[in-house]
Length: 543
Image (cartoon, rainbow, N blue to C red):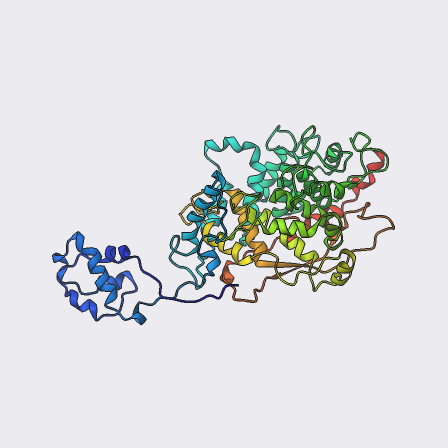
């Protein structure tokens, strides 16, 4: 890390000129011997007799005389300790100018004033960071859960996502969201279809994405009454209809098959403890396969020549799909075994590392694209899963190294400081609106608020696996009868930087499970509830 130094901080002369009072009867000469005012009250009480002799053209001259009349010690203000990496444009530039490179330069130009403290709030800490504006962000999310203006009809099919984004964001900031339980129950009931799954609204087609959002929203508010909203049997039948012979899942009946479907299916199967048997009507039914068959192989087929993960085989790598792939595998089996078995981890780490930019500190989602706050989660959230399976302190680390040839990761694989700087400096909407955003000069919204906070949580915490992979039957590379990764024991700790912590302790948000993206206690609660219900399992023979 670059050594941080302190130096004299420059002053904006316009600020001082604007603070001169209109009192023309006091002696201005007295100001040359007084202490430098540090508040508006101090400015108002300084003596200024000859202001009536000053014209508009004299303001710059007067201000310069005023500042220079003080000793260097009086003028000196602590310069925020910001590494040079985050204070200047990248030293490596391509000579080829394109529309993409010009947009990148403009983005850096927009971000630098926030990163260096020249723009944004004035109350920065010693490291040039503003506080997490909890009150504004909480107010923004709560308002987003209420009635919305008519123009929001365009996102009617995203209502389940608004539930999840807002409830998740509030939870990470320490709010108790159980008060929303009744509202979530009533809303979810209108979105569930008799054929299984949840749509974006009443009468809309069931889709894995909206089903994922509703189930996580239910898990966040918790309670048996909320869990009972989910028709588990219909959900199982519907998932069977989406299962494909190559191991993947369609996102809706007749829809596209992609890595999102693989991840969401793994989440739903394990949270609701669904049977793995396939119905005879399933496109993947052959008398031997189940819901998990070929799923890890499908994930592997989506890794690209760059090392990243695409939505489907032979498509472009994307940060969100990398998270879906890693989280899916981590649910299927112990990450220490399954991730190195199915993915080229060194190439994936290389691709993910290139997604983090300097000076911004944030992540982009694809090659040659701009930073975006949401990839704080989608790309940044990949590293806890990789770091956990490469942890040098875990109980199975030596076995893992011998089996995979991968060395342990003795330190963080990405710049947590860079990401935290981008989030607190560039992603907070400091207006009365609140919320978090893509980048400076973009509007805040619930989507970015949730995933920026998720990325902040990931950067502030460290997850370690506390369990070895269970032995598999001879010839098996992944568990075929259960998603045992869901039972992996995870421990979470505040991440301790070997250097100074750059943010205040009060700005730490709650940790969320690295694969399920909700707090671990909520994961445990909903899993325990459905594992304790044996009624559905006992009726399978009659189906």
